[in-house]
Length: 381
Image (cartoon, rainbow, N blue to C red; front, top):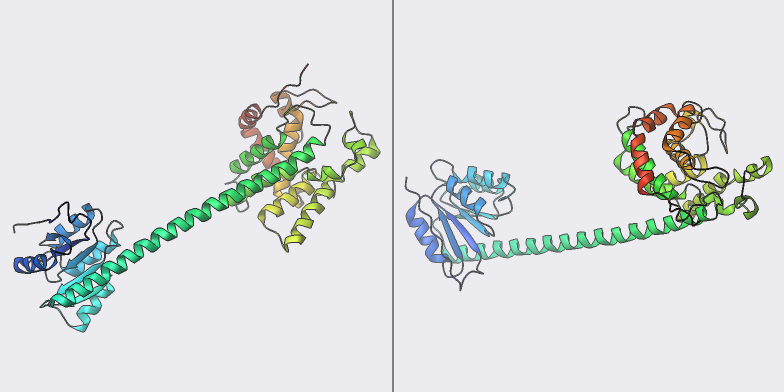
């Protein structure tokens, strides 16, 4: 069978809607083309297969007028395939057919057609139905564009709020760090380093059977964001202890240990103020309160042991101790990466969760790279 396609476009009508006419009878194609040519651009196909090709290759196709009884792919199957293809699924389809029984119309509409016009064709009905569906399709496109713009606006505003939240969190965490005389390096990047250490550890443990349920992508991001508040409780420690240029005595250390309690209580006040908690505040509270606990129960403030210690705090413990070891302090020089590794390994099963420490040893190169990327500036001589 010969296949004939025609397209009527010109500079003057380039903005007119484009309609694809699908019918295997030349007289029907000629009639529909003549009726529609003054109002619309038209394309034609005399079988379902060609209709599918044209629909998929014609950007901006606005409507399809589809016969049902055609050789090869009939109209119903053609419509079914149009709606199954994401490229053509949103193009409105109107059936034009001599099959005018109720069950025929029900079949067409169930396949996704928007209307069903019986032959012989009444021009006023054709014009009205086509105009209605084109108007509805245009309204749907406008609504979709509006929704997409609104979604982008919400995403942009959410990103701005998240950035502002991160800045406030970083400022609060940095305030606590800068009050601590232990952080003597200029431009101290302890917070940034520990954030990245914790995220690297969490990602490495994400598929470990002990931790997979807790270390979802969402939770890892929340952990990353909560790390800056791990020492927020230090703002409550007296300057005479916090700023002491040397090792604390027993009594002073007992006071210093209270920063874990102060940190927890501060975050609990926030939770009380907002009338509940969320993942970010929960992790921040856990880390602030428990990152000084040890696996064997010898840590503080509650001498928790093993699984009693929240996973977030166990991750933070590894990150915090490693960073303390490689950083210069008033009471010690900076350890090398290898020296820090040697010390950390000795804490496996005593200070640190064995599986978390093993993960640290497996990705110790990432820790070294993070430490180098966020290295502190050297003090002036």
